[in-house]
Length: 167
Image 1 (cartoon, rainbow, N blue to C red):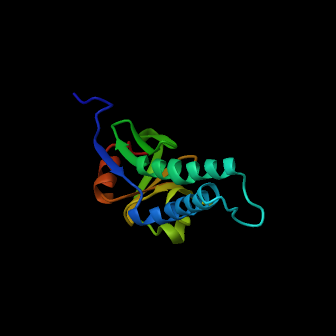
Image 2: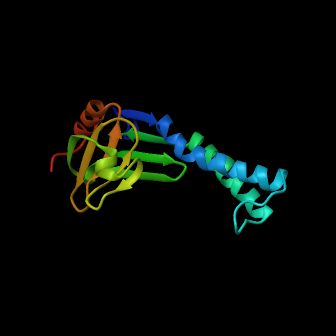
Image 3: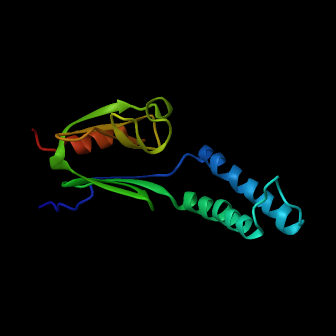
């Protein structure tokens, strides 16, 4: 006998390493501003932030945002009842297998189709786009499609396809 909560497929993804440049540049910028304004005592810019503001921004962009990115991970879990998609700590979605009307394996071009990576929406479909250039596109009876990028598109597709009930 099989449990409904039995995990049939599980994948953990992280943001691609090269995307860190978009978060580290602001971190270094705010640490540089904090150093010049707080340590050297020179104001930065024509309308400088207060010292408190500089410290707060340096903490937010220099510590908290990079720590969030280090912790952030995407998860895809398939059970006999549902697909659980998460981008922890900010997003979690459960998709009942009963709500799926069709599923396809698709190629994914993150920039052209979705404008980047992460939790995305392009007007016609939404998705969790992180790793891989392939994924699955889930169609629903009464909603726009949802795309999941994955490093193991065929395995994810086969697992979900074999557990959805024919419509």
